[in-house]
Image (cartoon, rainbow, N blue to C red; front, side):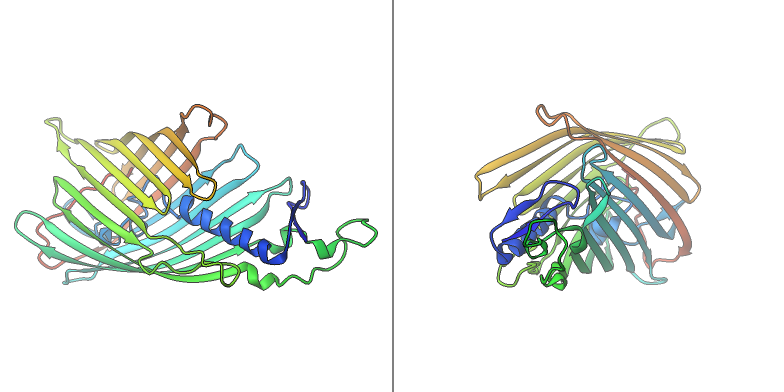
Length: 352
């Protein structure tokens, strides 16, 4: 027997150390499905939406390198708080049809009265994209190589061998192999996108190699393939500076699926967005399903080569009213100008 707890909260008994690591492995897999790094403002962290989106930073008909920073906070009114931070860069290689990019993402789950970090996921990504131009639209292909590190705050749990024989408390040192509660994984992703100034449509597949992320050897916890589909059209009005961009985003990974249909409105330097989102998770072990529907809205300010955005997700599902809103803030900066070879089309992507 061992005991896992929040230190300050009720302790949970689990039969054996092997099952303990199985539990941790299941928790990892659960985060992998439902909390695989993704952002509402998906076009800020483009390499994590579709590797084929690399190198598409442009301003006034010229190409630029692009830096994107995003901070996402979930479940703030609950005991468990999930924070995700991301920083990325992408840009075209001068006088070529190729683009390069990279990103780092850190996710941490905090819980308990001491606000302890119980789960952490670090991911680094490198990506490459290549453009095939035609007269009416471009097609861009991308590939990404990713490294992930999953870890659990071993010092934030207590174990059965720490219990004093006289049951005076958890005072003894544990003999559990704490180093085992860390898992490294490498995964490969790819995507494609067709676009011009009037539309964009593409898809991506992440975790093509489906790496084993088991905490305990032999549990065979596979990081499932994640499929993304994104598309939209730009509707230019007769009013100068006013552009409407209806767009959609669909995702499926393992037993989790999600989708968003939204409208982005650009009026000179201001951008607004409103959308409906839905998600569903199936648990084949317990034969249960959970779903959620909500609204998402966005406001952004564009000034020259700088874009600042803020979005909120609102839960609407009856029975899940206790789920708090999710906040996300992003910053996009166009850096140095680049020169692409045979660049016939440039796409305008919604920041939301």
